[in-house]
Length: 161
Image (cartoon, rainbow, N blue to C red; front, side, top):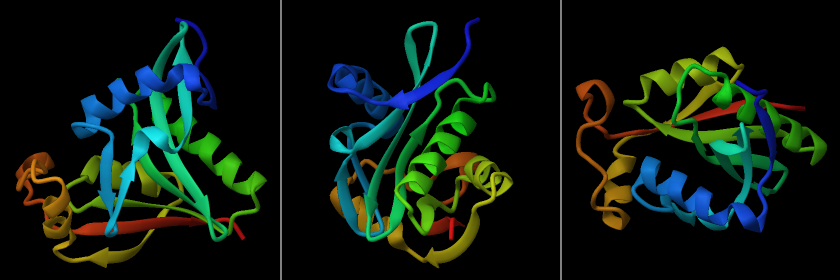
């Protein structure tokens, strides 16, 4: 197996990005903190191995903050998510961002473990936020990972200043 690399996405990656987003999110539309994103149009980092895209992180950079909108590593426990998050932190530092932050859901226990082990902290909880998200994406399930009711958004951040 060849080495994993992470790079900024290019226009040539669009089809692979849409495929990854569709597999992970049911399409490219993502709803977080009351904002609707078309993640396929955002800035993105892709992880590559053996000439294939094996992971994706989409983000926005505004007001001195880098928001991770999506992070997807379909093959887990191979370092793809870590490599993508490390690269995003590098992008944030290069942009002199104050923080890197993201939204996840209350059922994402694996994600919470992943983010906290990499220095992010829970800084906010928005109870019942998923009800509003379902108004835009009605196919968001009522029950998430591990049979946990999918209700709340959690905000995590890594301070960079």
